[in-house]
Length: 172
Image 1 (cartoon, rainbow, N blue to C red):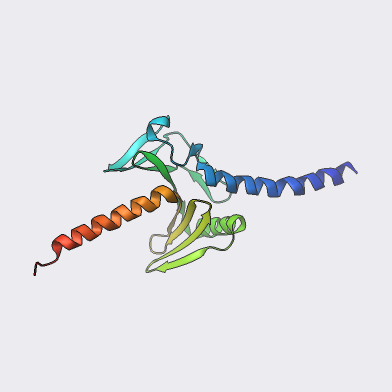
Image 2: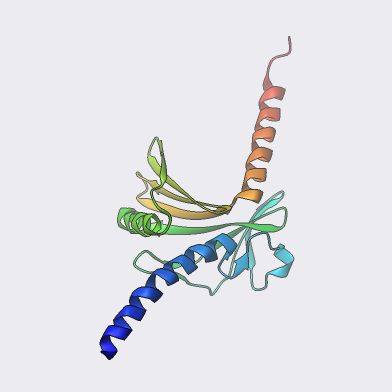
């Protein structure tokens, strides 16, 4: 009888744990809430900066995705606010395992095919999850983007590209 109770509790708790991890991504990543000011996050070291965009990591942090990834996380900040987390995956097998795991959590992905790469996209509330596989390099990247900030960054980049191309256009 006791085994039946434990088995039933396990079945009830396991789906709740999956939902909790999905809800956690909606709130933040690596213990950092989306939109958190860079100055409020301790232990980060800057890797690169380009204007309002900067990338950081925690030197001794090792992030684990069971059967998929174990390694560092790169954290992206736009206008000094946390907007992205990146994991570099090794090979097609890690890509496939991540795809299966994410599909189990968020449902079927929207796919984008580009020359030499496959991009799968899921939505989790205000978070866009992108899994990219680069065929030639044999590597993959898993990225989580907080849409309120990443959309603004993308619009800013499009505006800058338009201004550059407009300046290059011949005058009439």
